[in-house]
Length: 183
Image (cartoon, rainbow, N blue to C red; front, side, top):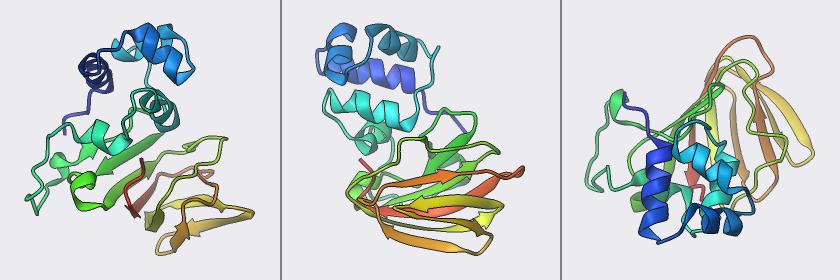
């Protein structure tokens, strides 16, 4: 599977919007050195960091990762045709097709031991659900935390703060869906 090149894509998008690294950094509230390192693929941003950067353009994650690679009429996908949305060594998010064209995001999520969506809880305007297919994951939604094991499922309003953490010693895999796509 070809890994999505976040650095090249960010540089392409920044230039399409006629922004300097300095201007994009100012808009995103980060240093221009961070933008430079990401574009050179010397720094892999978390999904939360990338989302913050894209807010300075403005562009959502779905549009950033779709990059016109998937035809909206495509129905079937092989494992090597999924779009990788993460460059993190502890997390992997593989997206089926172009979520923006279908108003639905389907992901194969992999959390290695220690994998965590971050101390800052996620919130977005969606509904999301999933099924644990391997290992276990600690899921916090609002004030509730539960460890989900193989076969366990979840479904919640994503405007409620939430966090996924793999606190075990084995890899966790989840098949999830989010509508509208996480932007």
